[in-house]
Length: 475
Ligand code: B12
Ligand code: SF4
Image (cartoon, rainbow, N blue to C red):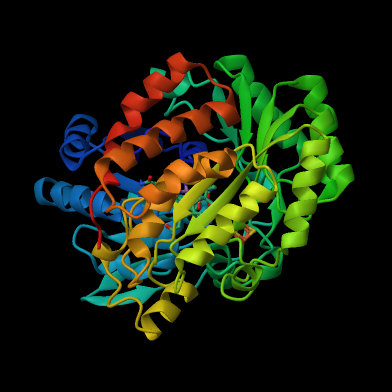
């Protein structure tokens, strides 16, 4: 069978690279195209004539997928349209939406191969686990299959499909996944909900062996430009033994600077290990500066003391770090938002990323916001096209907080700018602030990756549409 994956974002998706590799190993043809709008998606379909079109997507890309799927179905109703990835995994009811035939919930590696086989043989797929679809207008959600326990059985990610694009191939930063799952249950994140789907949820966190990861790293380094490695795992430092085994070989065989995510509270030995093995930047979540809200409302399970201690250790070992923060949470006041800024200033943050909370349907936090009357409704229009867009929560301080978001990076990094920037937050949100935010965003990107300005200019051209799309009111 011929599969075509379509997406609107210029970035290699691991979902596609994993299910693509599994399909190819089973003898199917696979292509992937970046088609930033529905019209271009349609033209890729006309050229490649696939049997199945697959979309892998997050909440924010839903509208793109629905537009493209509806258009494809109109001209080629025989094509099966398949949805998978973070958002469809938690929303099997997407199978009711026009254009979508089948939704895959959770891991797709085995499910898509079984589906491809059924489609090829022209037999029913209605008993394939992990799939959701409609039968006579009724939604059918099949049970989930157990999570794959031995990740090493998976083929290496299928990157070739993406690296036909010079833009992606030439990126000096190459992305890697060394594990699946996260043991924590922060309730603004999809992990806890995803874990609940699996019958063997105790096995939710799994690692590829260091050897498998090194094979992947070596294969990429030998074939394509790679100067910086970015480990995309939710928390890279979960298993100390495994980490030590991987990083010891990594320094010997790869030796490139790398970026990874950790959690505040990691011990000094682990930080030393990262510093000694070429780590360039670590990222960790502060989320909100108010410890009570962080651990109560968000269930993060990280104290201020841990954040301060982790930052001190990172400074001590001269490791560049980057915090992730969320503004405009339910019931957030201006003072709460300032607390988040203050904690970043206190730890002398060298780099800070700030998002605006998006009330995704199905998240416990969203349900609470609706029940408390903060959100009139949850639908496609109340979620921004990404996490830099204004949210729809009813909040008297919302506009000022959205402005703070635009100036968060300079204010966190250079507290002296407060006297100039804080008064500006009282003005109405406007495009100028958005452009200023973009300038700081780019500067921060350069700081934590170290990629050249030339590369940043090329990336800017590819991502500009995305950034512009965050400017709408979305309220
Ligand atoms: C890398 C990453 C990105 C990358 C690539 C995104 C991508 N689609 O791969 C980029 C930078 C583009 C990105 C952007 C965003 N991201 Co992001 N991102 C991630 C991250 C860290 C890893 C994704 C990944 O590669 N996982 C590994 C692969 C193997 O898993 P997977 O994608 O789930 O794939 C498996 C199954 O889902 C399934 N599958 C996947 N695709 C398909 C397709 C088909 C057809 C089938 C059958 C099966 C299938 O099979 C795969 C193998 O088992 C996740 C967190 C996470 N741990 O997953 C967040 C995550 C996906 N991102 C998230 C968000 C919110 C965003 C942003 C909105 C953030 C922002 N700043 O605006 C944007 C949205 C894009 C936009 N419009 O701008 C949320 C999504 C929440 C949701 N419910 O949708 C996540 C889950 C983070 C979180 N903690 O909640 N992101
Ligand atoms: S630690 Fe990070 S990835 Fe894990 S559940 Fe919390 S927010 Fe999600």
